[in-house]
Amino acid sequence: MSKVKVDMHTHSEYSPDSRTPLRRQAAAVKAAGLHVICATDHNTIEGALRLRELADGFRVIVGEEISTRDGEIVGLFLEKEIPRGLPAEETIARIHDQGGLVSVPHPFSRNRTFHIRRSVLERVYRDIDCIEVFNAREAFTSDNVRAAAFAKEKNIPGAVGSDAHRASEIGRAWVEVEDFAGREDFIAALREGSVIGKLTGNYIHVLTRLDVMRKWWTRRRAKSGA
Image (tube, rainbow, N blue to C red; front, side, top):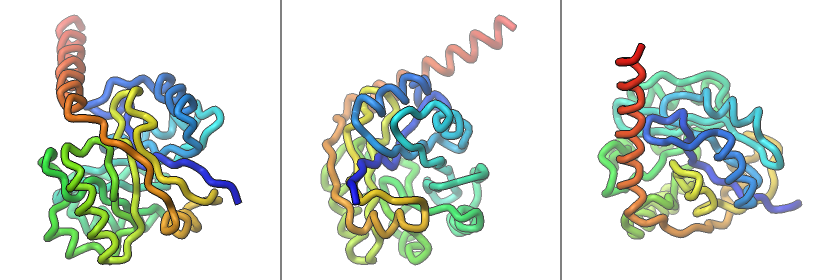
């Protein structure tokens, strides 16, 4: 079987903290040589569905980074949007109810305030399908190391993502796995995957804050001109 490169965590203009147009995102995925991308905008699958229509030379896994009451959880292979604000357990159950997979992003991050805490992980880890062991946007390498150690301790497959909010970030991280047909054999392939990636650098978080402010200002001007 052939190997494929999978970026399991990305954002587009459909996330409030990203201004990356879908067509630019698609072009960046192709230029980076990625075979599969998980489109995981915040609290919506609309961007993922549209990116899937634009995909040329790569596959799109429809996902969503969901703001739960206990921190962020990523749902993959989704058909329906998961509402925000639910407890972690209910969010996980709703993902599984539609045949999706549960991934926990950046679980030990020190540069983010809204992530799953260790106490919640200990509570729900048996129902997690994979956990992010490398996120290119981490400020500290040791946070990825801690996530990898937790995954190994609990025998949970490792996820890898660029967490790209800008097109320039796409291609910073991926997991290389044996090609897979669908969600059924994706986790098995992930267990044997190879982690490839490098940290983006802390400057990217400053740019993200600027993007949030620009989107807010654009919306405000649009409303005032209506």
